[in-house]
Image (cartoon, rainbow, N blue to C red; front, side):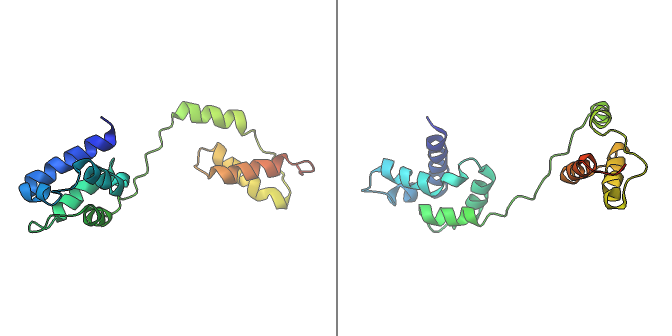
Length: 149
């Protein structure tokens, strides 16, 4: 079975347990495959987000059987996950090797218009974290023909 089919089957099982025959009776007279396909379309964006489905299940009204659209609205009310940046894993030796290889020493006398670039490169050579794009701009400014040194 596909993920989508497994997802809907599992959800129907949980809703049938919660509401009993009232859940399945709501769809009496309709082809069950068509009902499940409608639910699959409505909830497609939540198929791989179980925390959202759990949130929606926790908000269900015990007195009323939800439709696919109503359940989708409950899913949409789930709080967005907090941004979790993955910690940057760097090997100190590799970082030092990259700095040595690509950040050649900057001449101590650099024209005033390129002093910011020299400072940026020196900060990077010292191991300080500097924005990659800023470092690239600094290196381009120092390597440009006509750069005073």
